[in-house]
Length: 261
Image 1 (cartoon, rainbow, N blue to C red):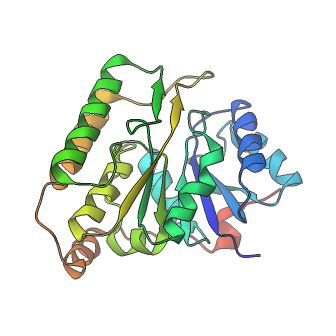
Image 2: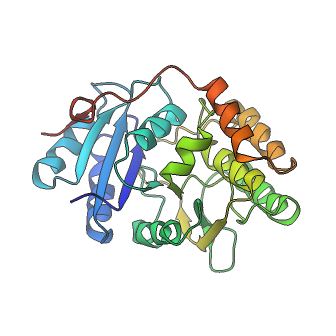
């Protein structure tokens, strides 16, 4: 059965901690789905645990990212490899609520190109996390919503669903961290494409160590923050921009790129 949603999970040495999160996703996602566990290294500690789950549930596949290391490249590779018309990006640390994956995917089914899980709309909440990161994210989300009319109060959250055709049309230029969420939201806004949101409760990770480096990722976030305020762009102009910048890489044959035990 062709999946209706591809769940893309970038991982980096999550080890056994990924098991609980994958089990929750498999339990909560009711739409026909594939779960792509995207790793940068064959010896990533996440892989054996994900493969053990894959032995019992064919929806799970481990996928080796060949675009280059880092979360941005892993997410881009995962969306390029997705078989479904909707890709939902979620983190491996359990901070996102997997019960909302179906709702986000259905919003894309209804015609939006970006569906955001929002911590900052009524009914949403952020629990824990570094204070500066919380303040900066909330400020960026509110100002983009008020002044750039981006369609969500939480443009920086990575927990989003995307129309995969839209992503492949406009491309993903980010190659550093988790700024893909704001990049694709900004591109949708500049094209006049619909963006929607639902409230979410985000919980700071309880296991392991966060790999979010504010100092390293901030310039990339600011680049796309200011990009969102530009005038409306025609689709062909944005597509041409991506064609000129697109790296000469593509996922390998699907039977070769994924590893299923």
